[in-house]
Length: 289
Ligand code: AMP
Ligand code: MN
Ligand code: MN
Ligand code: MN
Image 1 (cartoon, rainbow, N blue to C red):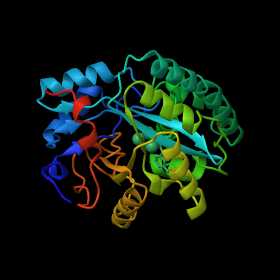
Image 2: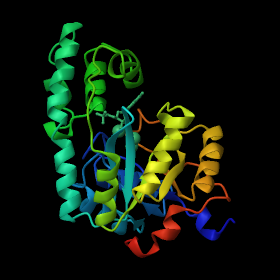
Image 3: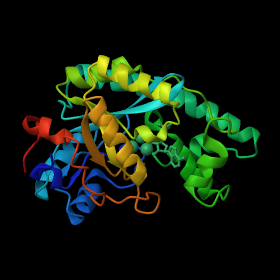
């Protein structure tokens, strides 16, 4: 059943310069507000350091706010992202868990840089670090920006295709948090866990079924249906999955940067009428402007 809440312009997935986005939380808030977003969540990777800034920036612009983060987990040998919404961003279990999982990023980045040096691209660790400052937050996106800077590729998407994805010369396997850990950090802090962009993982139907089943068993409650990472066919497919698995549906652009991102903040279609928006269950967790 469609309701007035279906028509709310909610954008519950995006990044700032606190992780691998390029705009500050305040500049992301400006852009969300200019695009008509009414309910916003900033979901930086494995980090909540931008939450207080985002919350204040949202309120200063008249937007309602939900706290957010996007946690990397390893499931069935692949990296899966779990978005957390509406939690207490000062909760020690969450803060310590995220710090622990971020700790592995510097080691991986040094290994990636060594691989890239072997294929003729030296200095990539220092080069990528320039784009983020903190080695615990260094991501493939920062390497991609550096490889564009030195002319190895024309744009960041080409860098991912040629260097930074499985089987390519700058890709390094990494063991992230477990699915259960990520869901526990989120739910113990009072939040709600959401499977991010399920259409992006290249799982077989059996693996995908296992992900949804285990996610539910650990207490996960939502799935992204309308996201910048999905095709229109995937909006329909994951709306069906949300109904089948009795999951709440989320909507978010996954905006990172005005030039790199395909989808701008607040510009996605509304959720299909057959699903229940995740923000219906999060009413008490919303910080009202
Ligand atoms: P990391 O957490 O360091 O593995 O980096 C993952 C980030 O890289 C994602 O959050 C995206 O922002 C970006 N990313 C991953 N795959 C691609 C791709 N094929 N094209 C562009 N960006 C990508
Ligand atoms: Mn990212
Ligand atoms: Mn993601
Ligand atoms: Mn994201």
